[in-house]
Length: 44
Image 1 (cartoon, rainbow, N blue to C red):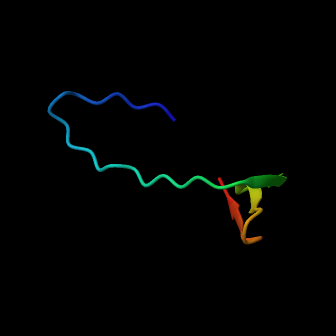
Image 2 (image 1 turned 60 degrees about the horizontal axis):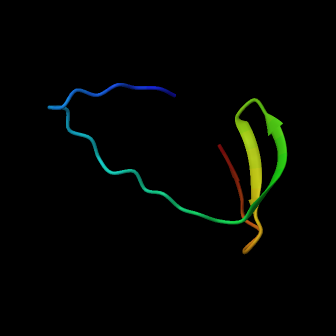
C-alpha cells in the first residue's frame, strides 16, 4: 500500500504490535500466522 500525504493532511497514529509469529498458510483473505506466545491466529 502506498499513499502520499500533503503537509496539511491530518492522519491518526498507527497502532503497532510486535509479536513472534509463525507463517501458517496463504488463502483468499491473505497470509495467516500464529502468535507463538499465546497460539492465537491472525491474518494480514
